[in-house]
Image 1 (cartoon, rainbow over the protein chains, first blue to last red):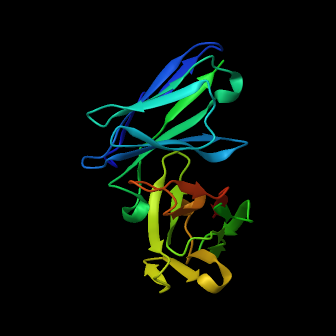
Image 2: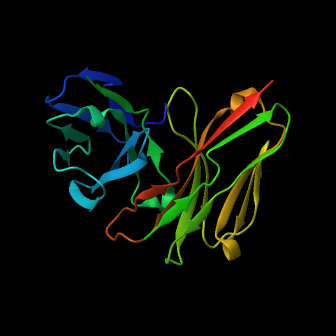
Length: 113
Length: 118
């Protein structure tokens, strides 16, 4: 157990639907990062939050949004889902920055049918 | 911009062979961190090593060793006496201090699929 909890582990949904992925960071970590791993795009950085505030944005689609709550857990919302959104979504957390390393959750496998 | 290149898409070896996975990185920052992660078939990302840009000492951990050379911007990973359980995708990643206020994203290479056969 890495200490980063992602739920659900698997998710199957239809095109056009909306889903929410949840991440609880390791205790004491203030930063949360979201990554998307698809077969054709590799591991892509989506977005980062630090202590509730958005700090960096990567290749995140407008249909996707995220937030970090006061208890530091984070949610990634994916809407108007398309087949191409099928991927493994990882959450990672760190104490402050990357200087102390990153801890990854086990991922949420999203399948859009 | 940061970039990590893993030119080897797939490597196949026979058990007990040594294998080296290459990683070349690009960054303009003088302070940065390099990582290796292992992704077994089960899908999770397993942390292997973190190295900062000021520490060029090579590191050995059991059958694993890492060679960091700033002169060539490379951070190669060698598995000695490979085993079937080493079969996985291995990712090299780079983190810099680009972002202020607490957090630097990881930029990943495309990964190297290692297959170790009996």
